[in-house]
Length: 92
Image (tube, rainbow, N blue to C red; front, top):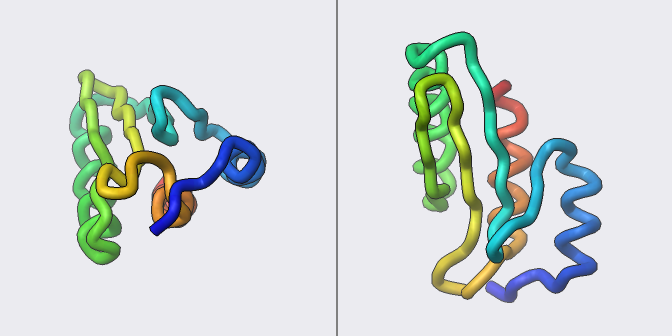
C-alpha cells in the first residue's frame, strides 16, 4: 500500500477532527475519567484493530491513551491508518 503525501494527510486530518500528524504517524490522545475507563477504551480498540489486522502503537498513562497510527511496512501513513482512525473515532 502506498503512503499518503502531505496534501493527502492534511485532507484526511481535516476530516478526522482531533487527530494530528507527528513523526510520520497520525496521533491522538484520549482522556478518560480514570484508569479503568482508559483500559476499557483500549479493550474496545483492540477488537477493532484485530478485525482490521492493523494495530496502533498505544501509550497508556493513567487516564490518558495516546495512539500512533502508521503503516510500518509501507514506511508512513497509508489509507489503512486513516480508516482505522475513523473507526476509532466511533468508539468515543
